[in-house]
Length: 145
Image 1 (cartoon, helix red, strand yellow):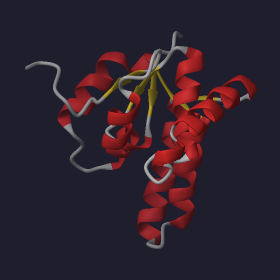
Image 2 (cartoon, rainbow, N blue to C red; image 1 turned 90 degrees about the vertical axis):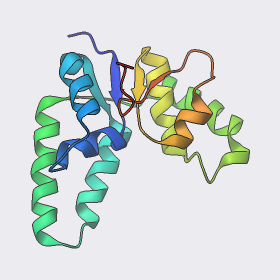
Image 3 (cartoon, helix red, strand yellow; image 1 turned 180 degrees about the vertical axis):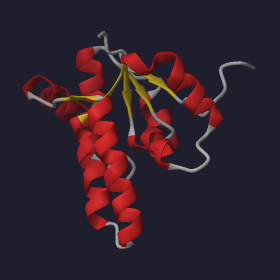
């Protein structure tokens, strides 16, 4: 299985909605066998389940997380990716409020593995869009215009 896309939390959140964005679902359906999750994103999802106060919602999110874990490869974050993330973190030091280290880790993982990051985070779309080697898409935007 060739991985091409690394899905961000903002995209994965659609899978737990009653009415997910149709553009996201259509784009995913076309490439689902080529999608993966970063271990960074996996940790964010796990944290959101742990912190959820509503027990009913917590059970639902836990089930969603279990399904995601069974259906997606979770891509590790290792030494080479850490070096790239450190460079990105330093580059974006002036934007530290907007670009947390986890975002740099996610994008470093994608850059190292030559994946496209799929996100709906407007800050990430703006800041990472013109960086050499980084590929980024927003599946909320219809490609059929």
